[in-house]
Image (tube, rainbow, N blue to C red):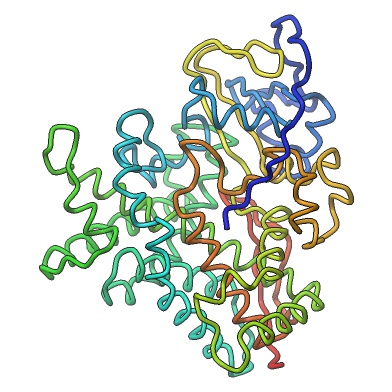
Length: 458
């Protein structure tokens, strides 16, 4: 169920003289392009393709290189000349730490990857199926009262519960799910601002926004310490990812340190819950704006499942549902901006990129590029039929990334999203309610600002 196009992109020909890429227009004194990235980042990043495959930006005092071509984003992901670093990861380190699999590099990352990967093997994921299905059906039941739904809270709640129950098994997560969701909502909004407008010490001034951010950060780290302490106090060792972390060894055969355990639990809870929750919101917005998609999903569920509840074994047969999810990922990717840093002088797109340079690219912009997608702004699930998907240039659609930074939970997340989408679309049609604001909310992840819906029984 991994989504990655396979048609190779033709290289851009002979390398040009290794000069510097052109500078994007619109910079202002002191802030550079940071103001445009803060005000309307989606439009700004999308128009960069008109200035070249690689362009230079100014974020405060920093020079940052932006990549707009799919084949070059593939080079970034696969080349050893680039590591996980840059403005995005610097802004995330206060949340994710420096010793978790999301932010680590080199031997530490490889060891952590070996610890985490077994929990997401294809032969293990069916064990999580009953939990995923149970949470999807619980969501359907909670929405049966006909009340106006705050989809923001509901989407993150189901994502946190699935991650916690599958990967850190224990009822102790139930009471903490709402606190985790509240903390993450505050943190991911504030971290984007810290990335594009890097004002350093100014973010330590005790103004209300900074105090709110710091309270949310402190609460999330306290929650993680509570989760680890509760597991240890229980004396239980279920076969899950948390047990694997508590029993993991370092390169010398010694138990890994407390900070690494803490950062790894953060890495389990935070990126997965935030991205899946954001995608559930975007999927519900798509089903609301395009009711015929929900009708076709309902028909597919009836044909595949019949009268019984949807189960994990149905996931691979729900092919139209999967295509709707993939097309939603294309147009509304939760992870819409990524950064890397060069470890040596290197060449990219015919330009010299110096060692230590920060490089950014936007999956949102790449996946809406008219050069890669006919009718690029049209929602068309059937563009992911096997015969049509082959026409998509390589790396023009890699929502889980590629190479050694590929998301280890790609199959897990696709199964989870398929079950939730199919269960909800089979049970309800949706309409927006007063107070809803479907405009994009720009944070570290991308999702609707506030989605208030009515679930109308079919």
